[in-house]
Every structure is written in C-alpha cells, then in structure tokens.
Image 1 (spheres, helix red, strand yellow):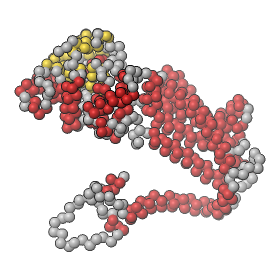
Image 2 (image 1 turned 90 degrees about the vertical axis):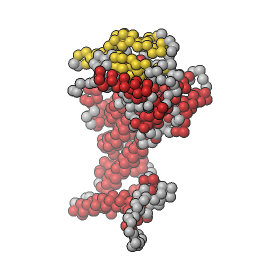
Image 3 (image 1 turned 90 degrees about the horizontal axis):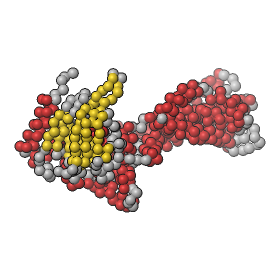
Image 4 (image 1 turned 60 degrees about the horizontal axis):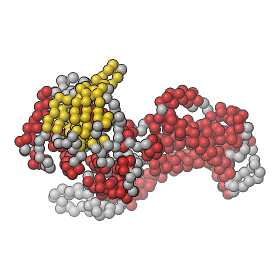
Length: 264
Length: 304
C-alpha cells in the first residue's frame, strides 16, 4: 500500500451540553493510506459519524490534529467529497444539475462547458443513472437518488471519498445492488474511501481495513481488522469463502461480545 | 391520473348501463382480473357525469341558498335591494365600466383598477424591503433577536392606525393609502421569509460547504430556491390582507378606488351598488389568491 493520505493524531471531540461536558471521542489515532478502503463500524452512538465529520472538516476536533495530504484539515472542501446518508440532492435541480454543481466548482475555472458536461455524464453513466439524468430527484427511487449522490462525489475527483452510512436508508435488496455497484466503481477508480456503516457484511465486502469502535461516550478505536481478500470481489463467491466467514465472525465477535450494549 | 383510472374494476359501469347478463354456467369463480394496462381504459360516461355533478351541484346549491336568504331579507327589511334590482343595476353598471366624468364620477372598472394599483405599489415596496429583511432575520440570530420584539409589537396594530402618520409624512391622501398597504403587507413577508431561511435543511448547507460553494452561489443556488415556497406563502398572505385593508383605507382617504366608491354610493344611497361592490371585492380577492396559489404551485419543487 501507498503513503498515508490522511493522518488522524490524538484526536478527541467533546461537546458542551446543559448537563456538562460530553466526551464523544478520545485518543483516535489512524492513518489512511492512499487507495485504501476503510470502514468505521460500531454500535450507534459510538461516534463513527462524528469521526467522519471531522475528516470532512464539517466539525473541528477539541484536541489533536487531522492532516490531509500533509496539510491540516481546517474546513470542508471538494478534495474530501461526502456522500450523505439521506442523499442530500437539491430537489430543485435535476440529477444532472446536482452533479454539475460540484463539477463546476472543482473544474469550472479550467475547463469548457462541454468538457464539464462530459464529466457529469461519465459520472452518472458509471453508476448507471445516465438514462434518468434529466429527471428531478423526486421522480426517481431512493436507491437511484443515492446513486446520484455517489456520482456527485466521484465526479469531483476527490482525494478521499467519505460515506456516512450511504446505504442505511435503503431496503436490503437495493442496498446489495448498490454495494456491488460501489465495489465496481472503487475498483475502477482506486479511490481512497472511508465508509461509516453498521452493516457487518458491507464492511467486510467493501473494505481493506475495518476500524471497530468501542461504545460511547468517550469512544475510541477498539480493534482494526485487515481484510485480505482478493479484488475484484464477488458477493456470491465470497458468501461461502472461509476467510470471509472468519472476518465476519471476528467483527460480530467484537460488536456483540466485547462491545455489547448493556440493556438500558 | 389515467393510470389510476385504468385499474379501477369496471363495476362502476353497471350503475348507469344495463348490466351484461351473467352467463349462468359459472361454476368456477370469475377471476377479478383488471383490464390490461396497455389497453386504454375509457372512463365511463356515467362516472364522468357523476364527477361533474359532484363538483358543480353543491356550490350551485350554496349559491341558491345565499340568493334565497338575501331575497327573504330584502323582502322583510326596507332599503335592502333584492337580487332582482341588484342584477338590473349590475347589468347597467357593467355595460360601461370605464367611463370617466371627472375625478369623483368614474366607472367601477376604474375604481377597481386604481385600488389594485395602490395595492400593487404598496405591496411591491413591502416585498422590496420585507424579503431582504426576512433573509437577514433568518440568517443572523443577532438580527432576529434585535428585531423580533419590535415586529411582535407592531404586527398586531391595525394598519389604519398608521394612516395619519402616512398623511403627515406624505402630505397627500393617495400615497397615504398606499402606505397603509405597505405596512400591512410587510409583516407576513418578513416573517415567512425568515422562517423559510431558518428551515433550510442543514443537509443542503452541508452540501454547499463540502462542495466549497462561494456565498453568492449559496444564496442563488441553495438558499433562494429553498426559501421561495415560504416567500410565496408570505406574499399570498400579504396580498390577502392588503386587499382587505385597501377598502377601509380608501373609505378614509377618498379619491378613486373601490373603497371610496362604496362609501360614495352609501352617501348617494345606492345600496344595490354597495351589494355589487361586495361581490366585486370578493371576486377580485379570490382571483388574486388563486393566481398566487397557482404561482406557488409552479415553484414548489415537490409537486412539480
């Protein structure tokens, strides 16, 4: 693997609440290498989305420092594209225009209109949405909206792609087909990716490493599991693969034995 | 619409047409198969007649009731003209709505138009001031904390209470009436715009931040389209109130206008004209409201 692209050093995050200080994250150390796919997994409330927002620059850490490509992350930017859980397409723009908004921002100064349009079309074709690109978001299904969200992120050619439970709001079948789609796109582009998820199969299927987080408050990284499975990966072939089953078991063991939430 | 109709089982046909004689030999139950989707299914005439009747008969009934009660009241109370004389007066009035015999004797068309003009001007100024102010209130909490108490204090005041101030500053009656329209239109405009800005989903703003959009693009591509439906609600509420207020304001200020016309006809004791004016004012208000609803529908992105 290549040199680290994102470095997270001694990062902690706490919020001031009415009941006093709430520590969400503590002592996070992680290096994400170029071209690597990382999953953040943990029970809800373990701060995995908080960590993703920190990398995105949407929030600032209370302690520690985050670096992207050697420079401190001081705010959000198009080099760290985010795919939001609820797709977050702007409803008054067509799918094409939604993707174009980002493309224009990144390449608008250097490239002509026709080149920009070609970029948008290529990104939408990559997620198989070219047939519906001039439709409005409310005219397409939830899975299709999320495809457009992914296309918007990829079209900006970010250094790193951040996905916050990208398929969490979709039904199981749609989710599987989108995972396959994403797997293909990631293998084609070699994009560095961080995926927040609570789906064990998804994490094993997509990732090079799975970062397992302990329960909050004051969550931190519990274990890191390297997934050594050949790419390209195939859902059906892996279902009975001994290594896949073993990895899956390891994550389940962490989540449901070591970090089982005590019933409130 | 047509697809919905296409799947209705053809039971409704039986209501108006003679049912087909059912073959007696049906030992097996007839399967309830809907007509295939690719065969265009024509809405039966009976159903269409029924829909039409449903849409038209109750309102006609209501109108009839109104006219009936009106006729009864006119019979009992002296001085109130019944539907017949009012209709005759209306026909005469509307045969020449745009005559002009000097400033105090003009056709009803001119009166309505000059009222609309005042509403338009006052309302336009209110939009020009109120919408940007609403944006500021919604975007900066300092602004809203500063101005909210003032707005809460002034909003319940009848705009007519502002009329003397308008007369004092503007010196003339006509712009003073416009001034009251400005005052009554501005509050819904400010409050709805501000509410719209506050309700812009955080997700959209996060998208803007991640894409690195400059402030100018955030306003034109994200804030403005997101706030537009709220703004249009404000405009609709404003124009409704403005049309209520203009009648009263014109009664006080005089000149040409539907409100003054009502008062003038009262002085002339032409009560049937007052009744006609009530209908005209109602109709114009209805048209204004419906037009704005139509515009709002055009710009609401969910229903497009």
